Length: 50
Figure 1 (tube, helix red, strand yellow):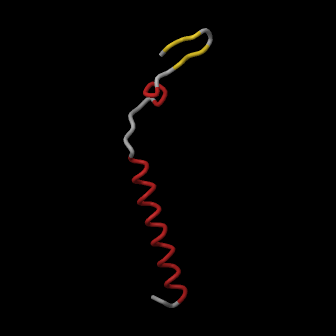
Figure 2 (cartoon, rainbow, N blue to C red):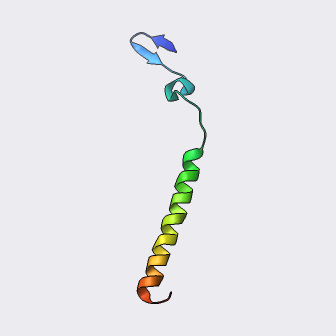
Figure 3 (cartoon, helix red, strand yellow):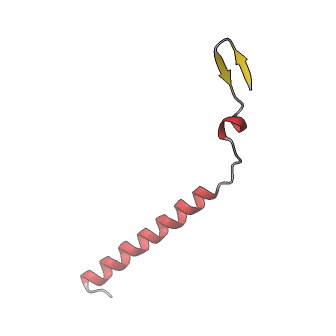
C-alpha cells in the first residue's frame, strides 16, 4: 500500500484481497452448456421430435 497525499494506491493483489483461481469461468461454461442442452430438450419434446 502506498499513500500519495490523500490517495491510497494498492497493488492488484491487495485490492482483490485474494487469489485468482479461474473457477468462475468453468462454472459459467458448464452452466451455459447445461442451459443450451435444456433448451434443446424442451424444443425437441414440444415439437414432437423426441
